[in-house]
Amino acid sequence: MSAITLLCWEIILENTSKHFGLPENKSLILLFIATVQFVINTIFKYWIFRYINRSFPPSLATYHNINE
Image 1 (cartoon, helix red, strand yellow):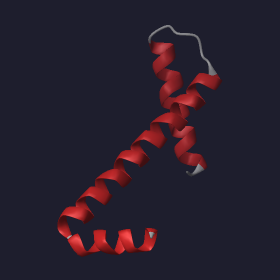
Image 2 (cartoon, helix red, strand yellow):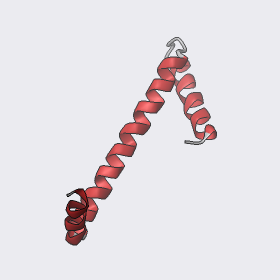
Image 3 (tube, one colour):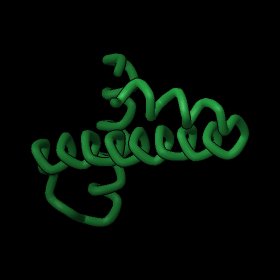
Image 4 (cartoon, one colour):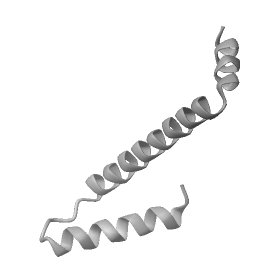
């Protein structure tokens, strides 16, 4: 992830917490950013894997042969 993207996430979350009157917690913001990106990445990869399996069944056979 680029430093600019990380900075944008931090600014958005800091301003959101200030807007709602919550104290600024840098550790919580960084943990939130890391968790959200991990979840989005996992869902995206799962979705791609499911799409490939449905669209190209021979790819699943190749995948199973690689794992054996």
